[in-house]
Length: 184
Image (spheres, rainbow, N blue to C red):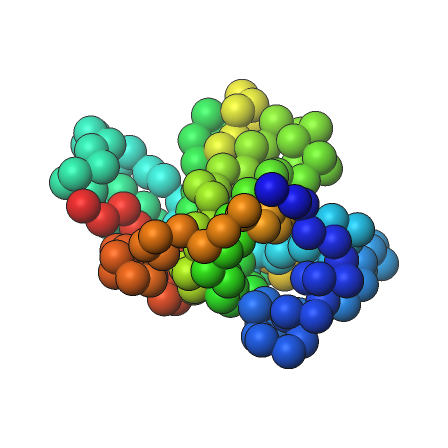
């Protein structure tokens, strides 16, 4: 397995549409950085957020998830309540090649503020907007900035194509657009 470089990422983003829209270099000007880095791509968060609320005193159940557990906010920023979380999505739409696995890691700027970004791997053949989960581990409200960098995606080339890709098995999160809630 090989971690793929900026040259490979740029080539596939520009010739195969692997990342749209694609930013070919790091942008930092007064923002949390985003765009192409040496061995990854720093994606941005969109301006649509689903903030967890427990006003209905519900139970979080991944098999019977109630969308009423979230309030939707569209704006330049999102305030996550203490010890809570929010869902959002990437600005970028990804199309992962059949022989590549993508791992997501939160940006250190947010991690140093107690904000954890969680994303499961992007499997070979998957495509869509990535749903991001932000956990506020602090006892204070935490702020996320729309259209700025939130997570780095690292591309790993497998030793061969898998027998069955995510697209071939018709994965439930294939071609998702917008913030996607849990499905069973």
